[in-house]
Length: 292
Image 1: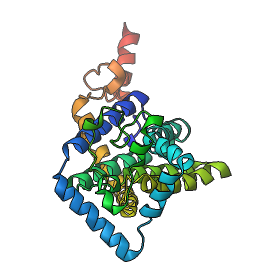
Image 2: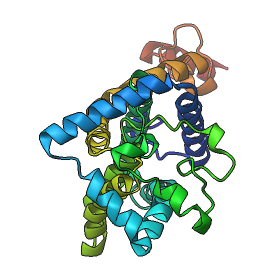
Image 3: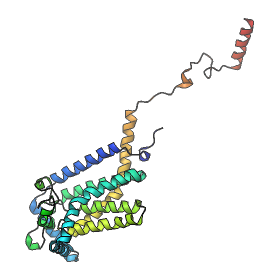
Image 4: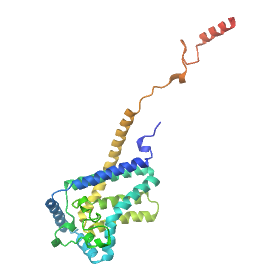
């Protein structure tokens, strides 16, 4: 009897295809969800006003620090441009190989949260701090230090490919959201103090980096964490729905095979079980055999 879907070990090739499809859909949706630039700027300024009113606009001092100190700003730009492409897949592979019992739930959580983030980009296009007018006091460190890396003045996109990304997809910050997911996985499933410490440090470092490079507001980071929280709540429902769909598909795809009664033996008239007769029939057969 096949195991239920939730107890089967995932196949690496199906997982790779699933992740590739979801990421391609996310990337295409993020690119297509370009809103009006003036609307995105208005949203960015509104966020900045709210942060100033709440005294949580940490972007300005961090951005000044990164701008004035290349020893901090350049590594931060490298971190912004690379870590989410490296650490997140590495954690997925680690869970798949070393913690298979927890992999499916973790993967579903990540995917659901990513799709929620895409909805946020669509509903609220937001201009990042680095693209605001210079009068607001932000410096684009990716552009300032572009000579040290492969990126240009268009966020973390490779030089010359800025047109293939949506620079107004700042709210929520999935850099922070994905980093938080990685941190939770390291804290929950890591078995050494070092892994647990990395689980705490990585999302905190990412939050500082996205603000210091002027790619996100503090509230973008908060929204990224909130999206991951909602994704964690919706993940179990998404898995149950996937199991239900998979179960129905498997039921319709597998033809019903009638049970074989008697293992291929044929019954004769009066036999209850193949090869077995009633006592009276057995006595009649014995008498006929003796007469012959």
